[in-house]
Length: 151
Image 1 (spheres, one colour):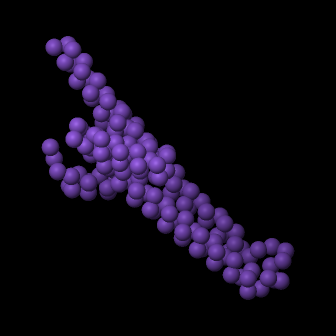
Image 2 (cartoon, helix red, strand yellow):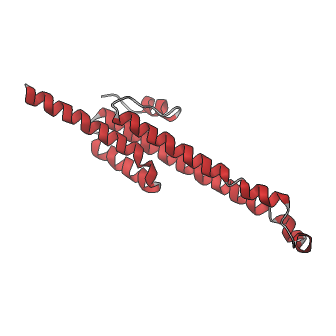
Image 3 (tube, rainbow, N blue to C red):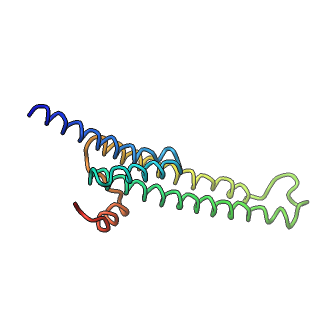
């Protein structure tokens, strides 16, 4: 009996670690999406807890990557537009660029903050699952839970 309890405790610990890795792989960028997807593929038949957490982590990281790429694209367009006054009148801005240029440059903070918050939330999910607590991303978690069949 003690042997069976020990094996059960190890299986639960392994589930926690796999779930935590799927969330924490966010620090690996695009490779994190692959890591979470591989964990989902390998564990989907073995553990409903890991299956849900890894699928959630995969979707969160993929959605976040798209949002960050969109944020950087918007920033790039805005920053490129800040050059228009200098292109139209190069002699007028020989000494210093126009104020819109500095605003465009400073707006680079927006995608960087989005990236930081995205990483922190994913790492928080990893910590929660490592502690053995249930974790759902705010919007994505309930959507995935409704779409994934229960055991």
